[in-house]
Length: 237
Image 1: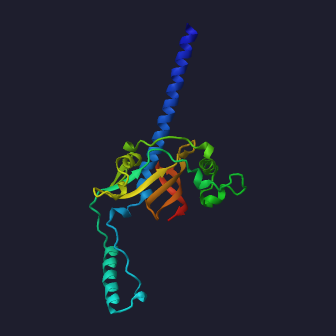
Image 2 (image 1 turned 45 degrees about the vertical axis):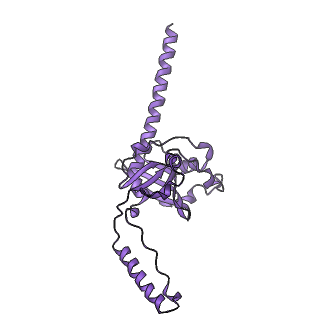
């Protein structure tokens, strides 16, 4: 009977430790994102969209074209010099599910002698970043998980909505008249070192059919705050 009690106690202690580890990992990811989110996304979307730039003057075929060019140029230059804050609700659709970025690394060979040092600056080279980047690129080390979007607080003027929920509610959510849709964001799983002071992840930012980018984000923690130290852009459109 005593053995049974000991085994049961050991089981609950083990489960408790695993749950605690999961919570710590989840908190680490959210602390990281809350520290760097605005730096990651940028604040240029706080402002109204710029008007379409004028057609180059060399394409003007007559006097009317030249006058039209001048009017458009003045409007564009004014909007560029004195941007106005957008009063619309600014929405970012963020996927709560981690994305396996294996497609982005399908041509990368982790067995090459130059890997992974060639993929980030010499000034950041360390065994930790070497290991984290190798884990990120190796699809077999991908860890499924979810972001608790409700805990993503440091988002400035952006309203964060669950991307999957938006897709269920409206197939053309990006065309909504109720808000200004900025972009769809997907994160890979987050790779953190044992000391919890270095991290990398892959980040998709899709702002339209021909607008977006995919990047590896390198972060370090200093004075208990995370910051971005390198962005390796893999594609842009």
